[in-house]
Length: 439
Image 1 (cartoon, helix red, strand yellow):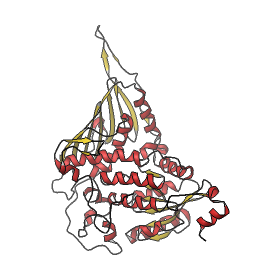
Image 2 (spheres, rainbow, N blue to C red):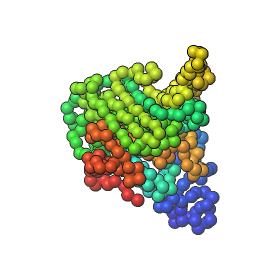
Image 3 (cartoon, rainbow, N blue to C red):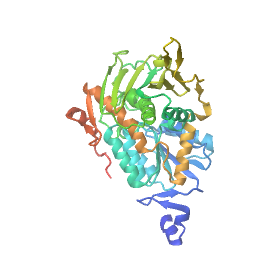
Image 4 (cartoon, rainbow, N blue to C red):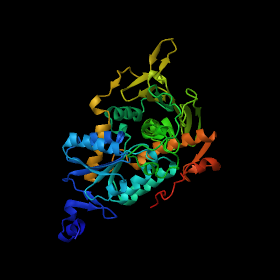
């Protein structure tokens, strides 16, 4: 008799667990939450470090297709906790482990959809890195999977949990800025430089490259496409638009209480580094027309002086003033008004900048919120529906760039009006035997 049947037969099931639709065991509030990590080289492990600060959590399993990464991270877990986790080369074996309650998915973007859907079906709760999916259809499938299986899913748009972001959004929602007609969001990354073209090479020892590719198109191994730089290739990601864009566009739709645009257009290219190996643009602008306001997105690599002299940020531009917020602070720039006697005054009272406390910028609060929701079964602050808004908007901007067309979006039908080329980009073509999840 397995644990689930034993609990049911003894009447203890309601006290110790809740059972997912497919028999997955949900941890009770008093239980230790056992966490597994799929993709543990970068943010996946940063998320784990943060999550292990929450009392009652432990790491029981790690999975990565690069054995050198797997062994190194296993050593890091031992150093942090004194316990060596189980190691997996295939994420499906980690999901089969009944001792894993929740998983962190820190793999490249093109893997998020399959792994999250499989984790939900296995009865696990999920913390998945942003962007939610690598296409519009994947985002839709992920929302459906989380709802169908009843999993708690938190997406790593951790600014949703940052105290000064919450304060800034309260101010935007207060109406003091007046009618907001334009919102600007930008990312100027001076630390990202040109990537020199490299020839294809042999797959490094200890790397399961076929599993790394997964549903992506089959290609020879190239070091430029592996680990961090995967984000500059359309097969696996969407460049800065989906890497930083989802963080910042998320704040736009949050502040404006908006969902999808009626129209989007975009331009850009590899203007700074035309000989770079990057496929995604090093320079890009996109204009989104929403009901009642427009959003302007822009990014650039190799330079760091963006609008308002900030490397990144969001500016809510209203009739009474502009609120600018980034990861360090938020502040108000009031508009002036002139009276008939020639004097002028500010439409908003001058206010000091609000500086973000280093210990409350969001990541630790975000992972803590996830664990709280695993125990309580409440909805986390950045669930799949919330995260899909930012991801889908970012993908719409990239599709407009790649088609070169101004695109009208039909939100009811979730496709572009009268543009077959753009609609073809909404759904990815998976390499067999992998298939886009359906529920």
